[in-house]
Length: 91
Length: 115
Length: 155
Image (cartoon, rainbow over all chains, first blue to last red; front, top):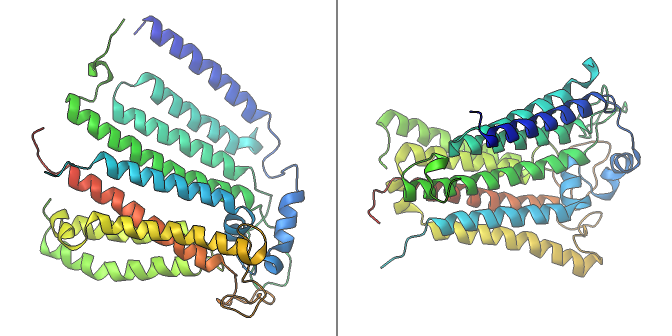
């Protein structure tokens, strides 16, 4: 229990825990975000520009479609890797 | 301090995930620790876009203009959840292969040089 | 892997069409209510996994091979990219919404919040493509893992 690796890991965990708790206590108060320009534009102009009633879908597929393209690529790569790992050599 | 409870919950989840990853020696427990870490980060992304007294950003036929929460952090969290599922599937298939090859799930029996 | 008893098989056979219809409803109405391609695809994939657990993977393997699921997933990904390129040709920018405010397939604009399914532009088509990709991908992962961990083999 008291070997060198455990002491090093405990010190690292203590430093990260103190940093996280202090950041959580000193952040801006919950419920009042600071910068509002981009999201206010999206809420005001979604129905005319995309014709959808759902704000989140219009952001995922229209205003930020490139991120959905990257996510589809990650999903395809993961499925191809899992299928490749379990393939038998057919004789 | 009461007003910042969601951020303290995020800190708690990340600390639990890091503790499981550093101090446990079973491979399945390490995979569970990584998943708890991902859940903490997703929770942090959602709580950044909330306004007090707001509703979901869906436009219904109501004539009054309710205050709506921001849709962009919710879209980023959706992407992050799907990527978490993909990474979990890949990790579990690698653990299955390691178990079949070495016969044990304990980290110290996987071979290599120990100090 | 063998299936479970007759009662479990009968209840799974009754529940599977209801779960599939609910999942396809969530995919198709993604631009009006909360939901969309990823959420509805996860619902339909969990219904398929219920069927695989109740009947056993030997029965599932005699009905659908694993390379059929690969073809379906590639069709979904190609449909998504194809819609982005058609937006480049017809609208001037990659991913542009070329069907909104015209008289074609999904081209209206909702008036004062009325929920009409004929709105949305290219959003419902993209929802279908991504939903097909997620269904095929998640079911392929579960099926491959279930078959591979149930065979006792000597290497």
